[in-house]
Image 1 (cartoon, rainbow, N blue to C red):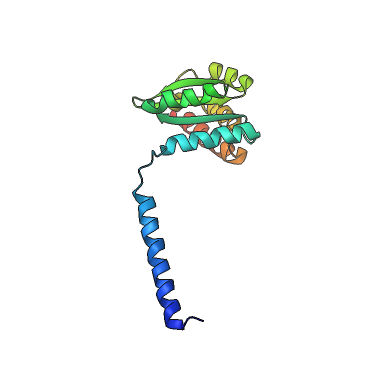
Image 2: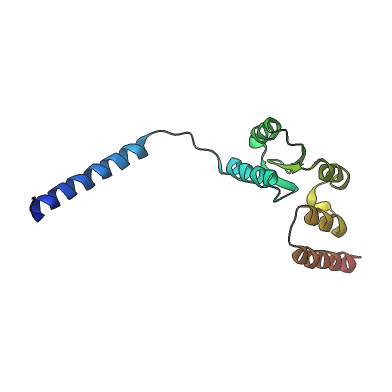
Length: 146
């Protein structure tokens, strides 16, 4: 039977082996998936599981082609909308929702009326009480503006 001191050496050697092995694993080169694409994949997962009926995904225009490719490969309908100089809004989900988006969102989101903004938020599944508060705040600004 080994002595306690022998076990300590074996244990230490094993820990040293594990540390070296861990370092080797870290040194391997891997292709990392951009965070925005991870977010997109989560949205697609939720859509496919029925958690959401429609999604608004905003990404850099440079990631837009990859996002569209992911959606098309899974047969998911989408609508694209420029969002400033560098970003792109990608709406995707149920066809009837996207048809409403085509009719509703005809200009930048910051230009939507309080009513249009409310409808969009409700369609996206945002907390309805928060949407009501937002609507009232935006409507008050419009009333005081005129």
